[in-house]
Amino acid sequence: MVVIVPTNKSVEAFEGLHLYHGAISNCSMRVRMTLIEKGLDWTSHHIDLKKKENISEEYFGINPNGLVPTLVDSGVVHIESNDIIDYLDDTYPEPTLRAKNNDEMMEWLHLAAGIHVPACKPYVYATKIAEKLKKTPEEQAKYDALQKNQELKEFHAKHAGGKQFSASDFDKAKAILGACFTKLEVTLEAREWIMGDKFTLADISWIPLYFVIFGCGFSFDNYPNVRRWAAAHEARQSYEEGILKWCPDFSKV
Image 1 (cartoon, rainbow, N blue to C red):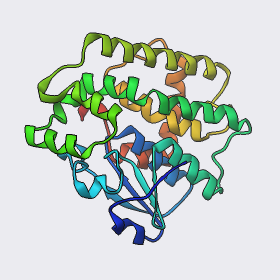
Image 2 (image 1 turned 135 degrees about the vertical axis):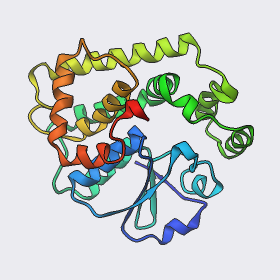
Image 3 (image 1 turned 90 degrees about the vertical axis):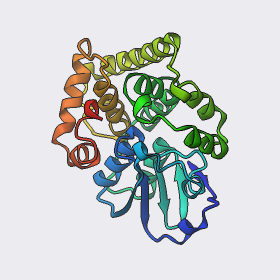
Image 4 (image 1 turned 90 degrees about the horizontal axis):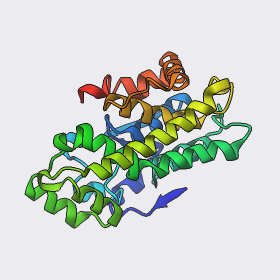
Protein backbone atom coordinates (compact mmCIF):
# COMPACT_ATOMS: atom_id res chain seq x y z
CA MET A 1 0.00 0.00 0.00
CA VAL A 2 1.52 3.33 -1.10
CA VAL A 3 0.42 6.14 1.20
CA ILE A 4 2.05 9.55 0.89
CA VAL A 5 1.94 12.74 2.91
CA PRO A 6 0.89 15.50 0.50
CA THR A 7 2.49 18.92 0.43
CA ASN A 8 -0.82 20.25 -0.88
CA LYS A 9 -2.58 20.12 2.48
CA SER A 10 -6.02 20.99 1.10
CA VAL A 11 -6.79 17.33 0.41
CA GLU A 12 -6.26 16.37 4.04
CA ALA A 13 -9.59 18.03 4.83
CA PHE A 14 -11.50 15.82 2.38
CA GLU A 15 -14.19 13.56 3.78
CA GLY A 16 -15.04 10.29 2.08
CA LEU A 17 -13.54 8.97 -1.14
CA HIS A 18 -12.11 11.37 -3.71
CA LEU A 19 -10.48 10.23 -6.95
CA TYR A 20 -8.14 12.25 -9.15
CA HIS A 21 -8.22 10.45 -12.49
CA GLY A 22 -7.78 10.80 -16.23
CA ALA A 23 -10.35 9.69 -18.79
CA ILE A 24 -7.76 8.02 -21.04
CA SER A 25 -5.55 6.62 -18.28
CA ASN A 26 -5.65 2.82 -18.06
CA CYS A 27 -4.53 3.08 -14.43
CA SER A 28 -7.49 5.35 -13.69
CA MET A 29 -9.82 2.92 -15.44
CA ARG A 30 -9.05 0.12 -12.99
CA VAL A 31 -9.74 2.30 -9.96
CA ARG A 32 -13.00 3.59 -11.41
CA MET A 33 -14.06 0.00 -12.12
CA THR A 34 -13.26 -1.08 -8.57
CA LEU A 35 -15.24 1.77 -7.02
CA ILE A 36 -18.22 0.90 -9.21
CA GLU A 37 -18.00 -2.86 -8.58
CA LYS A 38 -18.03 -2.20 -4.86
CA GLY A 39 -20.89 0.30 -5.03
CA LEU A 40 -18.88 3.02 -3.32
CA ASP A 41 -19.75 6.71 -3.44
CA TRP A 42 -16.85 8.85 -4.63
CA THR A 43 -16.14 12.40 -5.68
CA SER A 44 -14.59 12.80 -9.12
CA HIS A 45 -11.68 15.17 -9.76
CA HIS A 46 -11.01 14.73 -13.47
CA ILE A 47 -7.54 15.65 -14.71
CA ASP A 48 -7.44 16.30 -18.47
CA LEU A 49 -4.11 14.80 -19.48
CA LYS A 50 -4.34 16.16 -23.04
CA LYS A 51 -4.51 19.64 -21.54
CA LYS A 52 -1.64 18.67 -19.21
CA GLU A 53 -3.65 19.59 -16.14
CA ASN A 54 -1.45 17.23 -14.13
CA ILE A 55 1.59 19.46 -14.68
CA SER A 56 0.97 21.89 -11.88
CA GLU A 57 2.39 22.58 -8.46
CA GLU A 58 -1.08 21.96 -7.03
CA TYR A 59 -1.33 18.44 -8.42
CA PHE A 60 2.30 17.47 -7.81
CA GLY A 61 1.59 18.51 -4.24
CA ILE A 62 -1.02 15.74 -4.11
CA ASN A 63 0.79 13.10 -6.15
CA PRO A 64 4.59 13.63 -6.18
CA ASN A 65 4.89 11.74 -9.49
CA GLY A 66 2.28 13.89 -11.22
CA LEU A 67 0.45 10.74 -12.28
CA VAL A 68 -3.18 9.66 -12.16
CA PRO A 69 -4.92 8.14 -10.37
CA THR A 70 -4.68 9.42 -6.83
CA LEU A 71 -7.19 8.28 -4.24
CA VAL A 72 -7.88 10.39 -1.16
CA ASP A 73 -9.80 8.51 1.52
CA SER A 74 -10.85 10.88 4.31
CA GLY A 75 -7.68 12.92 3.93
CA VAL A 76 -5.25 10.00 3.44
CA VAL A 77 -3.56 9.99 0.04
CA HIS A 78 -2.99 6.74 -1.85
CA ILE A 79 -1.08 6.42 -5.13
CA GLU A 80 -0.30 3.57 -7.59
CA SER A 81 -3.43 2.08 -9.11
CA ASN A 82 -2.91 -1.60 -8.29
CA ASP A 83 -2.15 -0.71 -4.68
CA ILE A 84 -5.26 1.46 -4.63
CA ILE A 85 -7.61 -1.29 -5.84
CA ASP A 86 -6.08 -3.72 -3.34
CA TYR A 87 -6.58 -1.12 -0.60
CA LEU A 88 -10.20 -0.50 -1.60
CA ASP A 89 -11.07 -4.18 -1.53
CA ASP A 90 -9.36 -4.66 1.82
CA THR A 91 -10.88 -1.58 3.44
CA TYR A 92 -14.37 -1.96 1.97
CA PRO A 93 -14.62 -5.77 1.85
CA GLU A 94 -18.19 -6.22 0.62
CA PRO A 95 -18.68 -7.34 -2.05
CA THR A 96 -15.27 -8.94 -2.12
CA LEU A 97 -13.18 -8.93 -5.27
CA ARG A 98 -10.67 -11.41 -3.81
CA ALA A 99 -9.85 -14.84 -5.15
CA LYS A 100 -9.49 -17.99 -3.08
CA ASN A 101 -5.87 -18.06 -4.17
CA ASN A 102 -5.03 -14.52 -3.14
CA ASP A 103 -1.29 -14.98 -3.74
CA GLU A 104 -1.83 -15.82 -7.42
CA MET A 105 -4.23 -12.92 -7.79
CA MET A 106 -1.68 -10.53 -6.31
CA GLU A 107 0.95 -11.85 -8.73
CA TRP A 108 -1.27 -10.70 -11.60
CA LEU A 109 -1.61 -7.25 -10.01
CA HIS A 110 2.15 -7.01 -9.49
CA LEU A 111 2.80 -8.09 -13.08
CA ALA A 112 0.47 -5.41 -14.44
CA ALA A 113 2.20 -2.79 -12.29
CA GLY A 114 5.65 -4.04 -13.26
CA ILE A 115 5.17 -3.69 -17.02
CA HIS A 116 3.59 -0.24 -16.91
CA VAL A 117 6.71 1.88 -17.50
CA PRO A 118 8.85 -0.62 -19.45
CA ALA A 119 6.09 -1.82 -21.78
CA CYS A 120 2.65 -0.22 -21.63
CA LYS A 121 3.69 3.43 -21.58
CA PRO A 122 6.28 3.12 -24.39
CA TYR A 123 3.87 1.20 -26.61
CA VAL A 124 0.99 3.63 -26.05
CA TYR A 125 3.14 6.72 -26.41
CA ALA A 126 4.99 5.48 -29.50
CA THR A 127 1.82 4.45 -31.34
CA LYS A 128 -0.64 7.17 -30.33
CA ILE A 129 -0.13 9.43 -27.36
CA ALA A 130 3.27 11.14 -27.66
CA GLU A 131 2.15 13.60 -30.32
CA LYS A 132 -1.12 14.36 -28.53
CA LEU A 133 0.67 15.05 -25.23
CA LYS A 134 3.56 16.94 -26.79
CA LYS A 135 4.82 19.63 -24.43
CA THR A 136 5.84 23.15 -25.33
CA PRO A 137 9.34 24.12 -24.17
CA GLU A 138 7.73 25.99 -21.27
CA GLU A 139 5.61 22.97 -20.28
CA GLN A 140 8.65 20.69 -20.54
CA ALA A 141 10.69 22.98 -18.30
CA LYS A 142 7.87 23.07 -15.75
CA TYR A 143 7.53 19.29 -15.82
CA ASP A 144 11.28 18.78 -15.40
CA ALA A 145 11.29 21.13 -12.40
CA LEU A 146 8.36 19.38 -10.73
CA GLN A 147 9.21 15.76 -11.51
CA LYS A 148 11.63 14.10 -9.06
CA ASN A 149 11.04 10.49 -10.17
CA GLN A 150 14.11 9.63 -12.26
CA GLU A 151 12.48 6.71 -14.08
CA LEU A 152 9.64 8.93 -15.27
CA LYS A 153 12.01 11.76 -16.20
CA GLU A 154 14.05 9.39 -18.33
CA PHE A 155 10.93 7.97 -19.98
CA HIS A 156 9.51 11.37 -20.94
CA ALA A 157 12.92 12.62 -22.11
CA LYS A 158 12.74 10.01 -24.88
CA HIS A 159 9.90 11.85 -26.61
CA ALA A 160 10.59 15.41 -25.49
CA GLY A 161 10.99 18.11 -28.11
CA GLY A 162 9.50 16.02 -30.89
CA LYS A 163 11.92 13.11 -30.47
CA GLN A 164 10.74 9.61 -31.32
CA PHE A 165 11.02 6.41 -29.32
CA SER A 166 13.77 4.18 -30.66
CA ALA A 167 12.92 0.99 -32.53
CA SER A 168 14.61 -1.00 -29.77
CA ASP A 169 12.41 0.62 -27.09
CA PHE A 170 9.27 -0.10 -29.11
CA ASP A 171 10.28 -3.68 -29.95
CA LYS A 172 11.11 -4.36 -26.30
CA ALA A 173 7.74 -3.01 -25.18
CA LYS A 174 5.88 -5.06 -27.78
CA ALA A 175 7.78 -8.21 -26.80
CA ILE A 176 6.96 -7.75 -23.10
CA LEU A 177 3.28 -7.18 -23.88
CA GLY A 178 3.24 -10.22 -26.14
CA ALA A 179 4.77 -12.43 -23.47
CA CYS A 180 2.35 -11.22 -20.81
CA PHE A 181 -0.74 -11.67 -22.93
CA THR A 182 0.51 -15.11 -23.98
CA LYS A 183 0.63 -15.96 -20.28
CA LEU A 184 -2.91 -14.64 -19.93
CA GLU A 185 -4.04 -16.60 -23.01
CA VAL A 186 -2.76 -19.85 -21.49
CA THR A 187 -4.28 -19.05 -18.08
CA LEU A 188 -7.70 -18.43 -19.63
CA GLU A 189 -7.73 -21.75 -21.52
CA ALA A 190 -10.13 -23.35 -19.05
CA ARG A 191 -11.23 -20.29 -17.09
CA GLU A 192 -13.98 -17.72 -17.52
CA TRP A 193 -12.04 -15.11 -15.58
CA ILE A 194 -8.34 -14.88 -14.74
CA MET A 195 -8.79 -16.57 -11.37
CA GLY A 196 -11.42 -19.08 -12.50
CA ASP A 197 -15.19 -18.67 -12.32
CA LYS A 198 -15.09 -15.50 -10.20
CA PHE A 199 -14.49 -11.94 -11.39
CA THR A 200 -11.68 -10.45 -9.26
CA LEU A 201 -9.18 -7.63 -8.96
CA ALA A 202 -6.99 -9.51 -11.43
CA ASP A 203 -9.54 -8.94 -14.20
CA ILE A 204 -9.92 -5.30 -13.19
CA SER A 205 -6.16 -4.86 -13.32
CA TRP A 206 -5.77 -6.33 -16.82
CA ILE A 207 -8.85 -5.31 -18.83
CA PRO A 208 -7.75 -1.63 -19.06
CA LEU A 209 -4.38 -2.78 -20.43
CA TYR A 210 -6.18 -4.80 -23.09
CA PHE A 211 -8.54 -1.92 -23.91
CA VAL A 212 -5.74 0.61 -24.32
CA ILE A 213 -3.20 -1.40 -26.30
CA PHE A 214 -5.93 -2.84 -28.54
CA GLY A 215 -6.90 0.76 -29.25
CA CYS A 216 -3.27 1.41 -30.15
CA GLY A 217 -3.24 -1.34 -32.76
CA PHE A 218 -1.86 -4.32 -30.86
CA SER A 219 -3.18 -7.44 -32.61
CA PHE A 220 -5.01 -10.03 -30.55
CA ASP A 221 -5.70 -12.29 -33.54
CA ASN A 222 -3.65 -15.06 -31.95
CA TYR A 223 -5.27 -14.69 -28.52
CA PRO A 224 -8.79 -16.15 -28.80
CA ASN A 225 -9.14 -16.77 -25.06
CA VAL A 226 -8.12 -13.19 -24.28
CA ARG A 227 -10.63 -11.87 -26.82
CA ARG A 228 -13.39 -14.01 -25.28
CA TRP A 229 -12.45 -12.80 -21.80
CA ALA A 230 -12.36 -9.17 -22.93
CA ALA A 231 -15.79 -9.45 -24.57
CA ALA A 232 -17.25 -10.81 -21.33
CA HIS A 233 -16.51 -7.48 -19.61
CA GLU A 234 -18.93 -5.64 -21.89
CA ALA A 235 -21.89 -6.86 -19.85
CA ARG A 236 -20.53 -5.36 -16.63
CA GLN A 237 -21.66 -1.97 -15.34
CA SER A 238 -18.13 -1.27 -14.12
CA TYR A 239 -16.76 -1.63 -17.66
CA GLU A 240 -19.48 0.57 -19.11
CA GLU A 241 -19.18 3.31 -16.49
CA GLY A 242 -15.52 2.93 -15.53
CA ILE A 243 -14.07 2.73 -19.04
CA LEU A 244 -16.49 3.42 -21.89
CA LYS A 245 -18.21 6.37 -20.23
CA TRP A 246 -14.88 8.17 -20.04
CA CYS A 247 -13.16 6.78 -23.12
CA PRO A 248 -15.59 5.21 -25.60
CA ASP A 249 -12.90 4.25 -28.12
CA PHE A 250 -9.18 4.52 -27.37
CA SER A 251 -8.34 4.25 -31.06
CA LYS A 252 -9.94 7.67 -31.51
CA VAL A 253 -8.14 9.36 -28.64
